[in-house]
Amino acid sequence: MLITKTRVLVASLIAIMAVASRAIFAEEIHTVIIVGAGMSGLSVEIGAGWVEGVGGRQLNPIWDMVNRLKLTTFRSNYDNMSYNAYKQRGGLYKKSEAQQAFYAAQELSEFIINISKGLKAHRQDDISILASQRLKNQVPSSPLDMAIDYMAYDYEFAEPPRVTSLLNCIPLSTFSEFGEDSYFVADPKGYESVVHFVAKQFLVANESCYFTDPRLLLNKVVNEISYSKKGVTVKTEDGSVYRAEYVMVSASIGVLQSGLINFKPDLPPWKILAMYQFDMAVYTKIHLKFPHRFWPTGNGTQFFMYAHEKRGYYTAWQQLELEYPGGNILLVTVTDDESRRIEQQPDSDTKAEIMAVLRAMFGKNIPEATDILVPRWWSNRFYKGTFSNWPIGVSRLEFDRIREPVGRVYFTGEHTSEHFNGYVHGAYLAAVLNQQKC
Image (cartoon, rainbow, N blue to C red):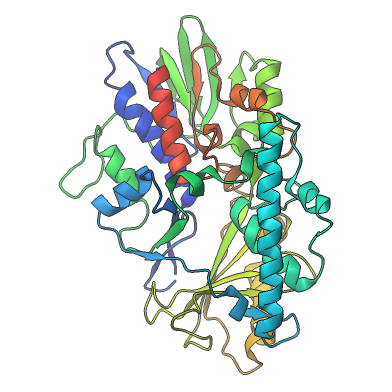
């Protein structure tokens, strides 16, 4: 069996802990309730795997914590993707053909960035990333071009360019402010160590590092929040009732859209409309374990891609020999509609599809995977996806309404981070901002 950690849980818990570290001890707030989103021999991350945004002029706070915890990390190197592009029906693309396609994609990317900057400078209306590609008359359509485009946008935002806002997503603040490098966390202690690091600043733990603080309540499913000028009442599915002066809600935007939590009275229309317009994307990391390696290893082989006529069909691959030596682990990432499709079919069907893709890339004589792990974030009522994506049509005003408190009900989480939504550091920084409001 595979021991797992989760990105969404990490992100939401960091938001909770960062707020609570001040709110619980703030003299002006006497009581506060914080509501969160509820491979054999190896520990892998099915959620957050990277610290993105490293090496820039500002220090990413998550990178600072990871280093202080001395977690084992590995820099992700995408530089040689053009040497590792596989055709749909087998074999690598010629290096000259792949490089030409990558150069064209780079030119298109620079054009898109300039369009975004121009729109911002002249305060013009937002458009989608796809619309900006159309302005250059260069919409990716071949399997190779779509695969490169997928790695540039879907792999980052978990939704395609036709959905994603140009003004609010290009260029990405994460990379422009914190740096362009990304580091993969592969430590036995897990990414959740970052949560523990924040939590230990204010929660009581025993010698085994288990939290024993009676203020921390786990395995509670909140299904109702009542609020008035006098305070808040939170009810859970097991019939428990909790009262406080304020409540901080860090559930994902997907959960808020799902109606799992019933607010009494109903949230005002301006709040509901703002929340319903934002997107909860789906990003699925599928791990496979094999009896032995059959893929290239060594320098320049960390990432490879599969170019299929269907955009996003098992496109993004990473071999994890550096991160898990001798583990014989492959990671393939799918997003959006493919994630939803895969979640609704048996793992055996997904494994069969993946094996067909691998045999197209590496030949018919490769071994069968001995284990597969398929997360189901979209189907899980406590997540309803993995992280938020800023879609076309949501203005800054409407975004501000997503994070605006309603009476004594406050909202936090990565989806409330104006510049870093979708990232773990976005969840943390949003919570820090909420500290100032409490």
